[in-house]
Image 1 (tube, rainbow over the protein chains, first blue to last red):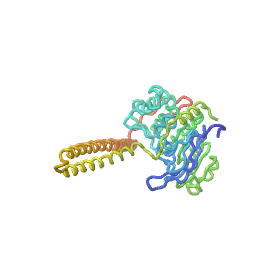
Image 2: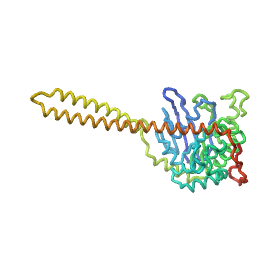
Image 3: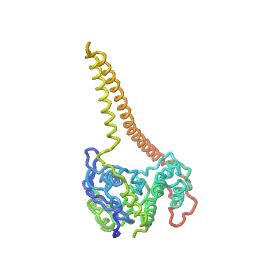
Length: 241
Length: 136
């Protein structure tokens, strides 16, 4: 962690539930400024719920959510998004019947003009410039994920939260996308990424945590986590993806 | 190392400047409940006005009936206001749900179609530091 700089995101003893079903049972997680934190775990571990709580989409039943050093329990997701917290949701969240450029225009809520947003997106993802008038639903899975990331990055986020970047994509495409994540991280954007492709994400992460059944069971450097993955949730000998 | 200290500082300042509400009190939900309560109160007031009107006797007669008339109108107004509030906020919730559902269904339809024709590959070579074209 950089001395003197508050963590961009910190969860302290966070609990969350859907109606009467408890999902998170006291999560402690820190995303220091300028670092990539990977959150791993099997399906149903509560990873996505953790991201929802962090981004204001789901209320914490107990515990504290700190963003940039301030407790933000109860803050609205759109308010956090306008200030620089960007969530790229599981399933990409693009509007399939809008064109690529119309999908990008959605991000003008943060105050940037359409042309600025398009320029920033096309500079990083040239393939989207060629598809600008194409409906997003007709893009390949990797291109849709690029569009989702381009939308998020177009707002100049300080904290980027990525949920299952690899979902439904070929391993080669996943590796390419994580190359982009590494580039974004090198620019100083703090990133929290939830992923099931453990090996790929550990290659770009500064630290990682493993969640199982609403608890964080391991937390440490990627090499340490990689060594404990099979014990943690995958079963012996199944750490490869 | 943080390469964007200014952005981090700006983010911290903007988060500090946020006006946070009590998470337990959501304005919309309270107004929806208030609308429902007002509807019930309005009906009770109107029913009370009817009882008052029917209980008028020879001595209190006209004055009491005028009071009952005013009270009845007040009940109707309260019911209309409450009904409008209830409709406004319940419709808001429903339309948000409908929009989210629509978005989800379109995404699901797009995913089903993704096995269809492959978009033309990107002929341009990717410059350094930018994303390469991704093939399906």
